Image (tube, rainbow, N blue to C red):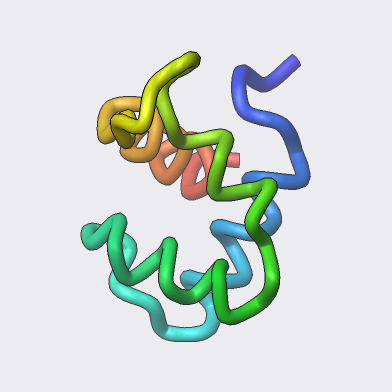
Length: 67
């Protein structure tokens, strides 16, 4: 079972196919916001915090590319 929900991996894959720079969390978040994916973006924030979890984001991108 993947550590990252399949729905999140699908959204990351869609962003990559759309030509979004996957090394830029801001670019990916902007793309997801444009798609109305507010809930998916919250996955990348640390629990009970307003801090973006870059390690979680990078890990999800890596998992998406390796599936």
